[in-house]
Amino acid sequence: MKRVDQIRENLDTVRAKIDAAAAKAGRSTDEITLIAVTKSFPLSDLEILYSLGVRQFGENRDQEASSKVEQLPSDINWHFQGQIQSNKLKSITSWASYIHSVDQLKYAQIISQHSGGIEKPIFIQVSLDKPPQSRSGVNPSDLLELAGAISELSGISLQGLMAVAPVDSPAEEAFAELVAIRSDFLRTFPAAKSLSIGMSGDYQIAIKYGATHIRIGSSILGIRSPIA
Image 1 (spheres, rainbow, N blue to C red):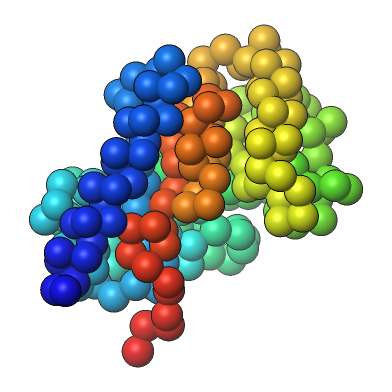
Image 2: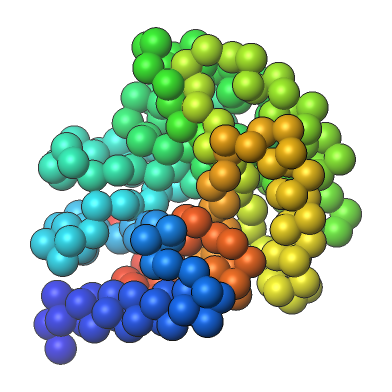
């Protein structure tokens, strides 16, 4: 099977499952943004995705992504969703349309500093791990304080929350917990309604629990291999 046919078939399958999950949850697919996670895939795969109508691409590494950005059309929205390093943030801010993984005030301050006066949309990453912060993400108990400090910065538009399901517990349990965390968050930040959760293994569950942005890699492009 040609690569374009493989990607088209996978993309159609994912979109059909999104439609079904949204219908089951009583939601419209218009509420859900599909981000194709293209980390470690060659430029040719991104060109295929673009030809199939995909305009939301997710990347985790600054050097790889910035090279791809330069070679692809300007109407693509680029989503940075990887672990943040302070020394990469100036560059990330220059190409990323959205930054999904802000979990410290210092990162938001750097983004603000390099935003060029244009509001950069960001998500605050919340840790769903037990104990919290065993990986990336702010402890839920510190979320409101962090969001309050970020909201005072210029050059930033707080979109909502982002999270990754724990590796050692059911995604459904974690996403249900996130619903309560988000409910408290929205009382103080009602405009920050976006919720970036759900990957290839759990995006249908994520839709049930209110995901507005889902980040799908292997279900569309297959298993990643390093770019030669």
